[in-house]
Image 1: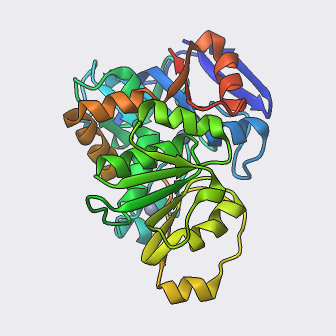
Image 2 (image 1 turned 180 degrees about the horizontal axis):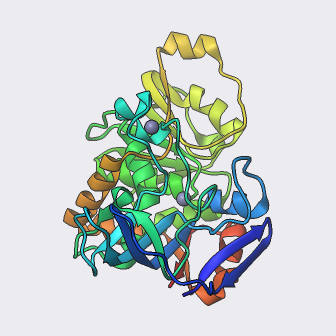
Length: 330
Ligand SMILES: [Zn+2]
Ligand SMILES: [Zn+2]
């Protein structure tokens, strides 16, 4: 049994616990991670830039695992492949009762303030496990968590065939929003300050239009997805959106100025979108199961894959800012 431990910011190592594994309680699963993905929030925890992170912590919230033992009262059996919903929800607070489990008042986040999934063996409540259809390959399934973020965000708006969608910021999340919008039939334009990211997205989404930020036309897009998390990108979204259109905030800019007159006169709508609910995972998996072309595009987002023992290379890839998701293989 190996696990990754982040003792304190910058101090990450593979640890082999000595203690015996504890018996399962009802409703729990013992699981073995197959693949893990590293994303921006992992890097923030690694660098000590996330206020609600605790240390030491076992990282890992993008996880594909296999069930090795199922506690009483679960619908899983050993051998089932699952993806994990890595943000807890209580099902009892007012927000959960409204179905908004993604903003549960008692939310905790795996790999940030509770132990994550980068381990050969660990225990998780079955309510956070979503079964993976057999036909979805491991390297696609591990990307369902970030994909579900895009599925959830794009559900804020109704996308019609031929709709003009702008995605501003072409990191993994921006690329996945572009993929979802394109798969729904939209005409998708992507912009980023880094030309290498635009080259990267064209390698697997050849039919998206890529432009530099200064080429973005005013009033041209009925949906603008802000995925750069940068002030300039947020402010530009209010110019780019067309009258009656929508801006979806996915990125995490600290703050930005809203040109209120423009916003009001356009009668635009601004949405915030954070993570996902259970149904977004189910919908994402069902979609990837029936659309193999989409699944192979998702797999093409992988930029690096290394074994757990070489975790430093995966973190180095992610920290380098190079496009493409870094994966750990267990
Ligand atoms: Zn993530
Ligand atoms: Zn709740």
